[in-house]
Image (cartoon, rainbow, N blue to C red; front, side):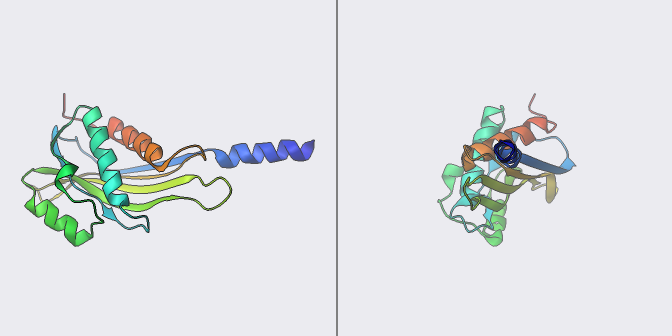
Length: 165
């Protein structure tokens, strides 16, 4: 009986999700934004494109005006040079992009989703990032990568100061 209780407690403890947020610049998120693909540093194909699509959806659901959509870009993995060119050729002043460092299901019995994302808002007029947040999270075995990504992006974006009102 003691072994069963220990086993159940271990599953409960190991199954808990852990989220880590780091916001390095806490300036207001502008009302009008353009979303471009994120750089993919993972072995998961199209992870940067998928995370950018979820980011666009979260921004729209929170009332932001996304002036240029991800629909304007082909579905592919983008390098840092590709991202720099996209920023340069985008007519918007404020551009949302970032990096995806981890986007996979962990190996093992439970196969929990794990993500590590850097979200950046670049100001072309100032030539610098005005907002940067890093998200690292591990979900439960019943979560999907998309759900884990969306929940964490919603939390980070909702907690950021906003100029949309």
